[in-house]
Image (cartoon, rainbow, N blue to C red; front, side, top):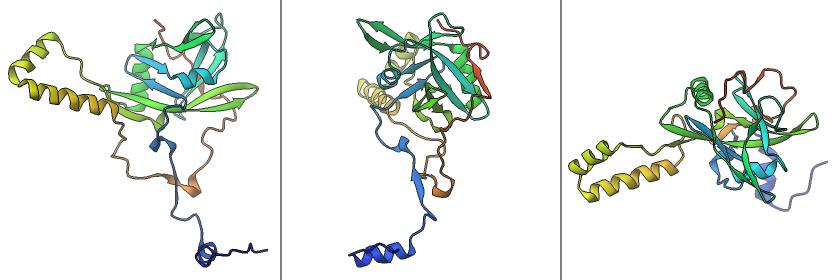
Length: 222
C-alpha cells in the first residue's frame, strides 16, 4: 500500500529513489570530542576520558590485535590477570587517563599499518557487547592523521634563530602548531564514505579468532 504524500516534489522523489550512488558518511568527518578515542604515537598509546568512562570501574585492560582485520580491541581484566595493563589512574573514585608507553608495540603497529613515524593517529572506538563482556573495537584503517610538532635540539634552535628573524620563527611555530591540530587523510580524502550497498556493521564481532594478546606482540608497559 502506497503512503499518501501531500508534497508533489516528495512524491516524485519517492517514485525514483534508490541508494545507488550514495555514500554513507564516515563519522570521522564530524567533531567527536566526547566520543571514545585512542591516540597512537610512535612510542605510546592513550585513551581519552570518554573511553575511560565507557568501561565503568575498569582500571586494568588487555589489548588484542587482529593483523588481518586491522583491528585493536580493549577488554576489561583484573590487575593480576596475565598481560594486564593499567590504562588509567584511579583516585578518590575518579579515573583519569594515563599514557601507556610501549615503543616496541607501537613500532609494530606503525609497521603493520605502514604509518608515518612523524605523525600520530587517532581512532574512534566502537563499544560493543560480546559474550557478556563490553569491548571497545578500534578500526585502525579509519585513523585520523596529525603531524607531530618537531622536537628540536638546542643546537637546532640556535641555528634557526641565526637564520630567521623573530617574526619568521614565530610564524613557523604557529604553522607547526596548526598542522599538529589539523587532521588529514591518506590521498587527501575526497569521498564521504563507502557506498551504501557496501556499508555494513563493520564492528560486529562473531568471535575473537585471529586476535593476539599484547604479550605475543611484545608490548612493554613502562
